[in-house]
Structures are given as structure tokens and as C-alpha cells.
Image (tube, rainbow, N blue to C red):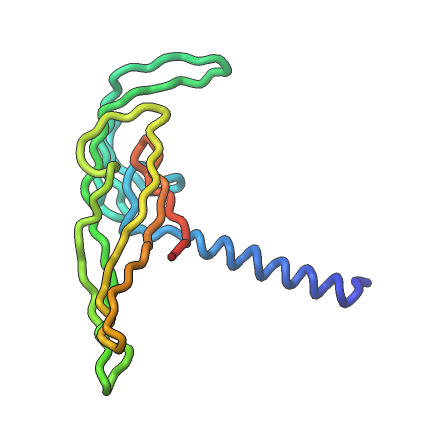
Length: 162
């Protein structure tokens, strides 16, 4: 029979692990490149990510065999631009939760044509500055949308906000 404190510890551990794993879920509307476990259609050099409609074209330039069976490949890659919705708060006296969603192009090194190497990793984030309409009417900036872009252009998002 399991002791009560051991059962409580296991329940707490399960809640923490499941919360952390859910926090790392990726917004499929922002996916680009060739994410793992994604549905793709296309040929050897072009693919369409069915979840977001992003087109990914990869033209090999050079491949060098390495020890251990690995291959370093330099490529000419195209990823379509992605768009991002973000919330702009506009509180009113009658509705403090009032606001609107705005859409903007999410430009980053993974969008458009570029060359890649096995070392082409990029860290990205979005900075948004807003005016606070409530006293003291100050400007605030927050950073959101932290992600790591691998050489294929695949974004790996982090659940961080500062």
C-alpha cells in the first residue's frame, strides 16, 4: 500500500510535468520550416505545411559527409512569411477588458530566401510597446513570442513572456 505522502508527491509531480509540457505547445499558425510530426505535402525540394499553409523550398548547395554518419548540408531555403495576431488592450470605464486583435506580418530570418548551414540557429522574440490609457499614462514594452529557429526554418517556441 502506498503511503499518503508518496501519493501526494506523485500527484504533485504529475501536475507539474503535465503543466510544463502543455506550456510548450506550438501555435500552428506560426509554424514554418518542417516541424516534427507535421503533415506535409510536396516533393523532394518543396513542401507545403498543411496545418498553416506555409510553403518551404529547400535547394541543396553542398553536402559534406562527417564522422559518425552525419552529413552537413548547406542549402538555399525559402519559407513563406507568417502573420501574427496580437491583443491591444483598450479599456473603457464600462468594460475594463475591452480591446482588439491586430494582425501584422511576422518577419524574421526564417522568412523569405536565405542560405543555411548546420550552424544557422537564430533566437527570436517580439517587442511590443503600448501606451497605458489609465493613469499615470505611461509607455510600457513587453517581449513575447520567444522562439528558436533551426537551419530548416522550423520555429521552436518557448512559453516565456517578459
